[in-house]
Image 1: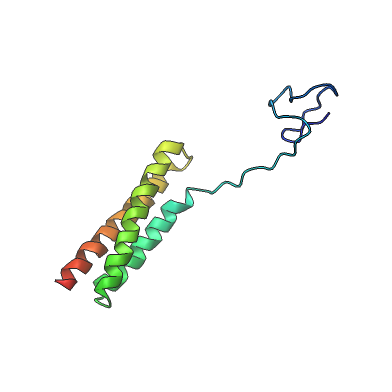
Image 2: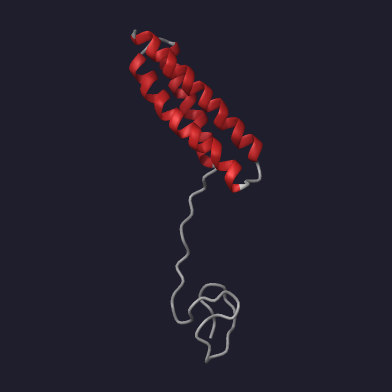
Length: 115
């Protein structure tokens, strides 16, 4: 019997796959994985977008809100490459750090404009 998960050809009387231990006879549905490295680039973009309304004095509230979102996203995305051991770790951490710094600038400057 062929395993639906790994494709290994098992004997007909086997209950579990000899290669991956999947229960034979059950359909394997692969999990949809989210590419977490994208979050580093998103943090950079959010940081850039957050700093624009604050520095141009368009909207202090937009700078504060987008800065807060960038702070949360940047902090989270900065940790991901260190934990997951991704191939372009330094680039991802640099993008996250720049996005985080820009978000801090937007947040603090937006609060400064409100006061």
